[in-house]
Image (cartoon, rainbow, N blue to C red; front, side, top):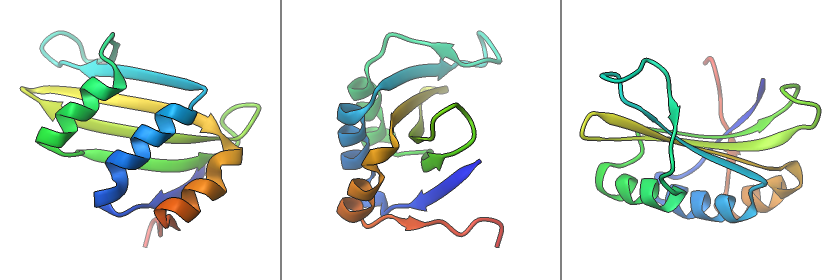
Length: 115
């Protein structure tokens, strides 16, 4: 559940960097299907994965205000990119109090889902 937001593609990299600075939790994963069908937690930093996105672009990007998933609502920023047949993921969780800042700074608009 949650409210999804759209962002201009040109602002994604900056938003992810700022979100990582404000995060209370960050995780990086890889999915290498020749090894496992599940994502594996990795030691790559967010910045190393963002370097891949500058070469390969974002395959998937989500900014969502999560509600009802955990005891407290939170903001999730999720990224997927790919290099050499390996998918890399960044998951960032932030306090919901950051929402207005990100909406204003990055001109986020609620996404229209299911239309």
